[in-house]
Image 1 (tube, each protein chain N blue to C red):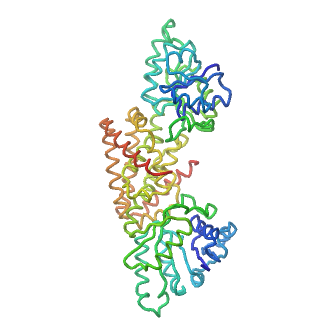
Image 2 (cartoon, rainbow over the protein chains, first blue to last red):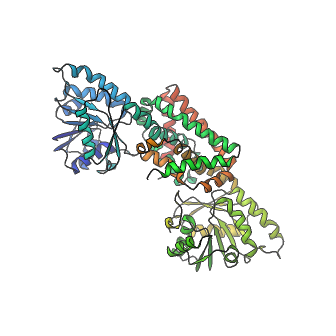
Length: 288
Length: 288
């Protein structure tokens, strides 16, 4: 590949840049952002080769574009770039929600694909979500091995171009990731449970800690609430996109919490042990 | 100190042994347990010098005894050892609950202290709780620096002997810990929020993960549920001891969870952001 463009060079975008350059997957890695300082820092770290503050001109000279911006900006940025892209340009993203983004972009691209003379007639978008990252922000936390052996979901719909899907899958695999293809709605249901609900619970717990007990927190409290330090706007946007699936994931949690509450209230230690045992068994099945 | 006896040589007991020996605080560190294999392993790791399967004889030859056994066994083991202790023997523990343990032992010791001819007349118990450890078990995870700069709570009541309290505080400080004195009930209220509720929530979340989504968990889910891998019997005993404070800690959490639920249900993103912001501010105030 000649030019890879990364829009948003933070922890994830920076890691994609480092991993691409380490593996020699592109001649040029271009970073696009709103702040020249941020871009310069990413260039100094070796995550990107070139910088640009302009989406349109960056779009015009790229074979692959990866958007690493907050979920509420991805679809509009894709739509802004598409008319400037050369035929064959492939666009993907790393957003934590897929349904809203993929539908908006596909609705935008569909009429263009039918009119081969239109700008963006042969431009494809495939939604992606690498299950990596952390509560930290900024390219200073970027890591060339961030995707190594981690899962990346790529979204397939009835409208997905299979050649474009294959190219995006190959890209993630070349960065070291394992790839799983999912329907966007299925992705959002799963991630509501495995990522967005944990964030909500971490925030609910962190939010009620009285300050005078700060010193009395140890590893358990810190682990369970670590992600509550994540960026507020970013998580608000994720919750907005995935509101229904998050509400659906809250239901079994609330039921389980009520079961714990009932068991404690009635001193039903057999039930408490059963609940703890089920949880331990499932947690022991996850590594790390 | 000539002889330190550690009852229960797992992660915490082993760490106390390693830290004591590293700092040269006792001539002999004796480990007491029910399994010779476990004790031999701890001796091979250098956490203890001698092993014993018998509480009574170990009690007879110790200046300081630290119980590192599950919270539902500590008080009865103290009572079993006291009649065999030499005058001046000091006993402490590392249990995650303090109210039940301290009251049981003080009720047992009080009549003895009044009769100077009785066995155990000059034996003192001070409840302790080092805020260290993890979901891991066994002396193979012991660490000589586990207590370094970590808080250890020591429990003071109206019946506490202040000389004994000072000796226990000095012991923990010599192991590198910072020491805070608290009333046992206050300790239990605080720890219900900072440790026992997080465990319950981690277990409630881990317990509802459908197996087909195991692969879709990343750092967030793993952090929030890590402690759910903890020992079931041990945590059931903690919940039993601290049932009322845990139920009390559940109340503000449930209220906060309901606030999140309402905000999502009504798409009140101002409220969602406010809740996320409060949580981030508190979490940012904790290190690590």
